[in-house]
Length: 86
Image (cartoon, rainbow, N blue to C red; front, side, top):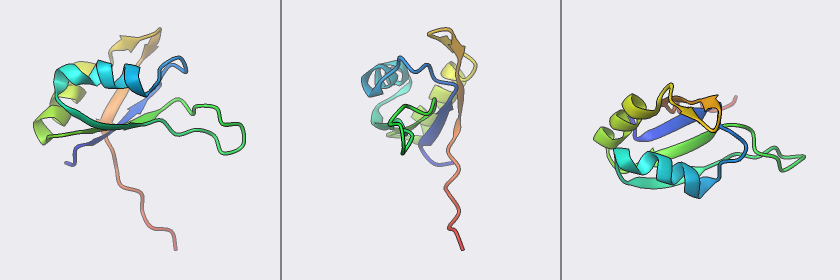
């Protein structure tokens, strides 16, 4: 498993800093990326969080998957690398 996590069902009120603060108790957060819609610039409701260590990633999944944040139940899973297009 890699240290990059997919975080789904995010509230649109959360930003990079609030997500980093949410994940910090599980371990050091290396980066947070919140994709936006290309046309509207609106957040798409999910993010990618990269943890410094494998143990931190596993701890974040254990602590945060299914946790309610801002009225929404988070989905936290290992990120699956995008397959190259043909």
